[in-house]
Length: 579
Image (tube, rainbow, N blue to C red):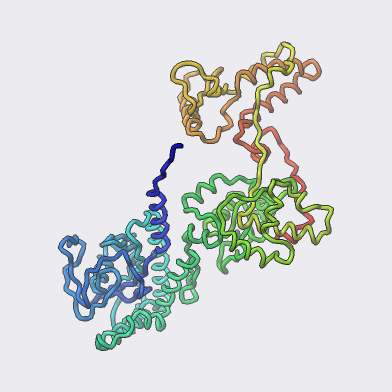
């Protein structure tokens, strides 16, 4: 028996990448440049174990390795005031590197040195008509909030932390103009550093950063931002109880919410596939901030799991595009998941996603332990079951409400998945009696012939045919030399060859066309010409969608055949239990 060996190199690389991303960011730094000096005022956490740093220093002194790129290092000598950092550089060297020149302020910053990357957004202090008095006598020109990332951090992550640094910088600058915030906090930090330097080195118990955090509101804010990034991935803080700073690391926030981790690019691809018939299921802790966009608060009030996005737009009066933008915002901030509206005819099955069953079982028991267990509940959906059979409309209302809350809970935590019906347009069986060969009027034949002819790969004959390609045979008016049509169908063929969803113009087979023409002649014996023409026209509009790539909800929402759509029986009697 043959034995197959699988390489674990890719698995190790994935684990290493996951371990690296878990440590992002390694630390936060804060530097200021004044008229007389540049200084690193704060570092958090001060006890970070940085395995990415190279030991370039001994004691207080900092030494340069021979192979170190000297062009990146400043031409200065450490003084006795320079302190240690976990990143192989003293505070004096770091301050010189991170306090950039004036023409580099107000621009994204990135510096790779050793095995760490320093990213931020250096900001010039905006001038004010009546300058504030400086408590410590130093005038400030610029400051810089810096995040330290490990070597190999994705470029998207670097851009995200540059964005967070920019937000913090603009908030600090705004408060400086209003209340002299930066100068006051600079004075507090600088004073604590001076006190630390005045103590003999052999009497140092802790670095000065912890004392600075307890005295400075700005340092405490930096510590809170760093801790929130590592704990939940979501930052939502008020700077001096006045300026709100919001930021989200999508993958970490989704993981914290027990959802499938996705990057911002993956979420944007998901948003591009959202349709008006989808619904939005909010997570438990969704509360808009006091100064949130009114559309966000209004949409959340009308957001129910039995309402589609189109219904939410209609009920709230918010334009559909605005609703979709709010949905994208909720997804990026791990505040909601996209589902299909909860309908009695929905068919659900136990989800196949990888979950921590012990943790999910304990959490489920906290909500429904007095009624049922998670294992018993998931077993009820295997094999798949229609929702009305699980809820049981004949049972008491209290029983139905509990069952409905259980379904909402399972959908919210992605423990259930919905099954859909997909439609295919099939060629009739060869044994089926075919319509008699009646005359089909030219007007109806032209309607049928205008639909592009789709040739299945199995029907291709001749050299060069492959199973991975799908060709479109263009007939009728599409033979004309029209560059726009040619480009359109070349794009179409490229999409099909990539095994993506067939677009509505994919066409129908010639065999179905012949059958349709014969059926049309037979229909004219019992119905009028106008009625048959309308039916054939509607069918030709719908037929290209019947390729197995569109489920029933898709057909109902986007097919021009169905002008009006009656909503199915929503669980209207259980609205109170859906919240």
